[in-house]
Structures are given as structure tokens and as C-alpha cells.
Length: 254
Image 1: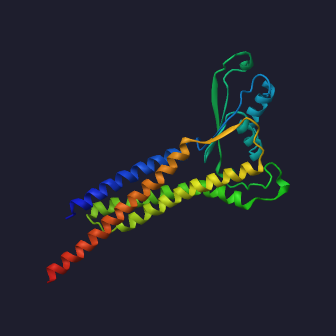
Image 2: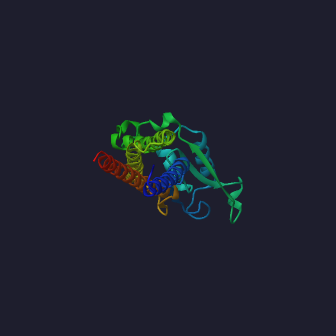
Image 3: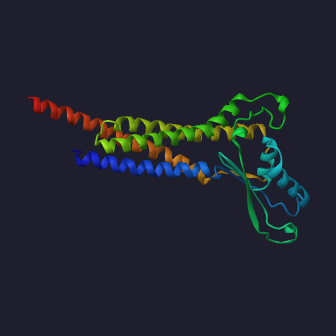
């Protein structure tokens, strides 16, 4: 029989784990990890309509080149995620005649092969040599959240089996899995931020472009401590239940 304190800790830990998993899943599937706010394209110093149309077509249908899509993100209010890159473009071709054109979002996903492409010391220049640090930061930032989700689902599967067997013994292992998941999520955010910082050091950001962190990144950042709090509750419940079990066993033997 499980003590009420342990049952409460398990329930709260399960709820925290569920919230963290939902937050992380939403973060991985959305593109608002990093966003750029570009100056208006129309008018005085902006790009003309033909340039924007060419950039849009290159962004959607051209080969994936880090410098090309980064420049497009800079100039067209782009957003970047782990699996997506998006730009905001006018909905109509005659947008330059309208004072306040309607904007739509065009998104393109990174394929699995593109995720493993090398990053170069000078983006767009393949002769500059591979930048190993940026290459592996990019690979880690999309692999680690998948590892984190996998660890949580493995923990959920073990927990389901433990419930069917009416045993608290696997709770310690489930707690460790959640702790590792939280660390992987935190490492994902760190890799992404480090990669963006290195990219901005080797790329020239146009004047007037503001950059900021997006809500998807904050969701991932929130999910990390939630996983760790769930892990702490599960580890406490497992350890306390084991100690109580040993005391009860010693009492019965005595």
C-alpha cells in the first residue's frame, strides 16, 4: 500500500511531466525560437518589389544555403526554429501600391539531410572550411530535444508497467530519466543560443534589423525545470518509500 504522501508526489510529478512534455513538443514543432523585425521594405531605403519577389522564390524553392536564407530572414521579418524557417511577405503582388499591405507567413522546413549539412566559417563560401563548432551545435540542437522526448516516453512506458504491477520500485529509474530529459532540454536551448550568437558574429546583420528570442524557445526553457521538478518528486517518493519499506521490514522481523 502506498502512503498518501508518496501518492501525492507521484501525481504532482506526473502532471509536471505531462506539462513539460507538451511544452517541449510544441516548442520543437514551431518556428518561433528566434525572430527578426525588419524595417519596412517599401519606401525610401528598402528593397524593391522585384528583389523581394526573387528572395521569396529563392527562399521557397532554391537550394538550402545558410547565407541565402539568413539574409532573407533578416530582411523579411523572419523566424527560425529547430525544424522551420519562415518569412512574412505581402499577400498580393501589387503590395507596393498599398499603404498597409496584408502580410502572410511562408514557411519551409529543414529536411533531415539538411539538418546534417556542415556549417562554414563564412556562410555561403564553401571554400572557407567547415566550422565544426557551429556544425555540431546545430546538430545537437535538433537531436537533443528528440532524445529528451524519447527519455520521457520511455519513463512513461516504465511507469505504466509499474502501475500494472503495483510497484514503486521503478520510480527511481523514472526519476533519473526525467532528470536526464530536463538536462537535454536545457542543453538544447544553450546550443541554439550559442549557435545563433556565432552565426551573427560571422554574418552581417543589416542596419535597422532587431532580433529577439521567440516564445517557442521560452516554452522549451520552461519545460526543462518542469522535468527536473518532476524528477525531484519521483526520486523523493522512491527513496522515501524504500526507506519506509526497510523500516517496516525490520520492525516486523523484530
